Length: 419
Ligand code: AMP
Ligand code: MG
Image (tube, rainbow, N blue to C red; front, side):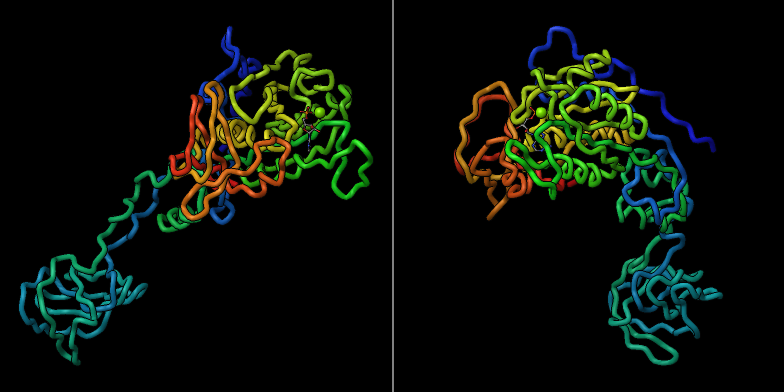
């Protein structure tokens, strides 16, 4: 099989419709969903290496599960339903056990010892639990009624050979690996992991562990973004920090584009003097400033650099994280071939009060305690401790809201985002 790569994305894939000013979150997401397509090639891997990988095509069950009718319990097998009342059946010599079938047939009106998982021999379709039986060498005695097929599993009752067991785009879970194994599939055609380069920008940044002078701060975004991307199942390429210098930034983007499918930058994404990410993407002619009606989040700079999509995230760690979860994560899932997926949220009573004006969607840092959603005490987008305190985001719809304690609010756990 040839390793076919999908066609590259179009340079105008991030273009906004003319006349748009502040784009509502749902419209921004719909645009990403419409415009982006998978960019990863496919390969064959053994299922032992397939956890978290994205299926490149549907997988058909090679074998039924169960492959043959078998016993669900330890007991005695015979044919047919048994009416109410006491019954005595002659017991055949021998037994059927898992992996050790009974070679002969069981004549009508006789019983055979069967163990859990044993293929049902010819003549057996019903099993009685051993706890419900008195047995000696030659006979068993028990009470009915018992339905035909009791305590037995039918061939293919779970999956039939030839059925589609899992569909393309599925991100393989531990349970999926069990299903694939059970249906005889040892290797799968999966997409190569998306390769994501992460760059921090800003003259003020130093790495943790380095001496930090006055006016300098530690780079908090890069460790956060790299680890988020890893949790999303992608491969990361740590491009380090770049100063607020256009030549250095162009060089970093060149290097990132040569190694990665997608580039995430943080900082310098607005339209200010020192906002060099948006400036160099504009020079490249494929930059779009997405002014999304969302809080937190300054403009997102979306562009293409040498055919690679670039997500220019805000520098504020809180905004960088929220924008990554809300916009970059689903976009990267699409690029990785996993299709579009929405994070699962839960309506729960608020433990806080908040008044919100219409016009922007808001994400607060939240967590659940005693069945209620608590919000972090401050909405300041530089408050990294709040990200760490939180266990998810509270999503407050675009319109006006006056939230009182006890009112339902939508809580989206970080785990729903794959973190
Ligand atoms: P910018 O988007 O570059 O204007 O940055 C907005 C704010 O985020 C500024 O206060 C920056 O110092 C801060 N910031 C930018 N990048 C990072 C980073 N990697 N880690 C922590 N804070 C950052
Ligand atoms: Mg900056």
